[in-house]
Length: 58
Image 1 (cartoon, rainbow, N blue to C red):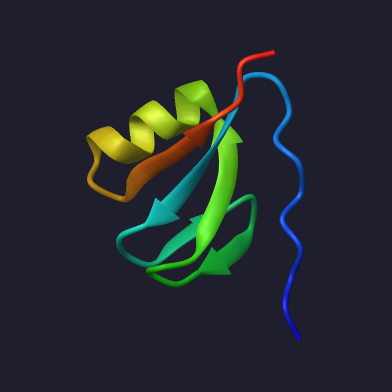
Image 2 (image 1 turned 180 degrees about the horizontal axis):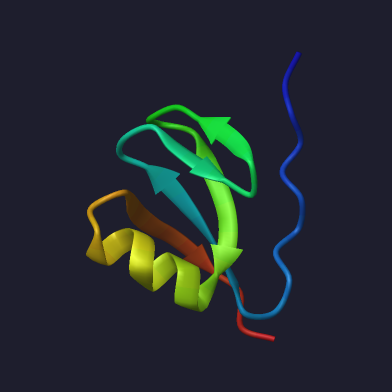
């Protein structure tokens, strides 16, 4: 069963994980995508956890 992506809200980005990570209490594997705030995305990218994919300007 496939999951539908939630639409991005203003100030959110979709990031692909480069390694396993726990976000908002949920465990994700490398290759999965999470939606985070711009500040969270910057921290994740700076720590080599994600690659930024898509940004919503609203």
